[in-house]
Length: 303
Length: 89
Image (cartoon, rainbow over all chains, first blue to last red; front, side, top):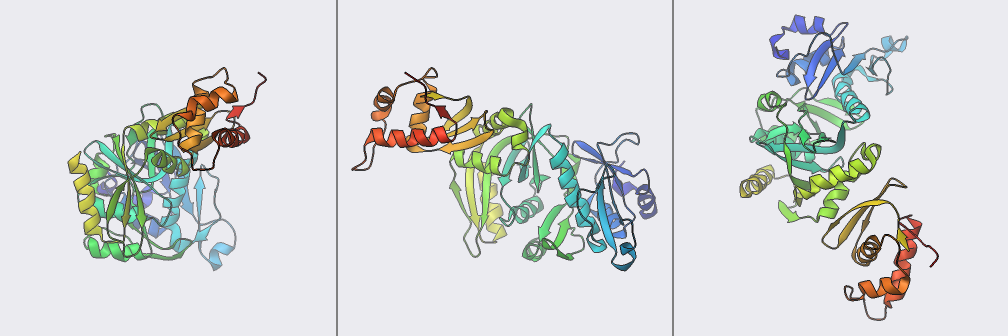
């Protein structure tokens, strides 16, 4: 059974206590929320995700109004993980992005069976392309464009590298777009299943794009590292792919890993193995997504 | 000098080191790579003269630079990072 099998009423009721269990890649998340924006966000963005077992969840999270009088004057939303709030509340209008950010935090803080890298990751069949980069590099925009043209989405934000096997574990979730990239993707992919634009967040305006259903259905199919591509957005720059030294690629992975230090030497060895197995590039682009997709397609077809 | 407990990978002329004592990761290039690789090949230690002779054939220095001075400068940096330690002969 998948989330889309639930009617609007069933979904709303399922988000009451004890929460809706959603299988998100390798984890099961129990979610509770009374916010309409969260109900709508889950209905759209998690439509193809499986509903998990009723008696188990890895994480229990909620997005609910905080206690206290303030909730009546300026409606707010508070994310809780196992009952405790890791963040301060945000305006209630940001409830769905808060759920996404909270889930990111939950994974980074608790999923130490993986090296978790701040990187988009897409795949052709079982060959994964990792795009490590700090915010503002255009990785989510690229990721959305490539997903629109048939690449398998493993994640637009968190690359999970199995610490034992060294393979990439898919965790397809909504693609998070910010500011100018929202209009860029709306032009490039007019039929993109995009949710509401939420303005005035700490990251500016944000909107999410539903992950392709086929990518969600393929969540159990792990991928092997094949390419590391470091994207750099430069306004008006032509699309250009240039070789990147493996040592520089390694440092990109390590610098963007959330829990590299937690794993110590094993984390080093695992990331180094990923680099050894990958062809490494730097990709500069100025927003011409057709050129970018062609470049990535050529790269994949050449292998 | 002797190398401290490290994991490492060499790619081209670069060396990436993980220092288990500090939990730090370091990216060495050119002379730093050659010096550290020579030390890693002599885990029991190597004296400065032998170290310089080991890497002499592999390094082209800019005019006016003296290899031993440069190696000593690199060793001081590596010692500061706790990647090597000076031991008595």
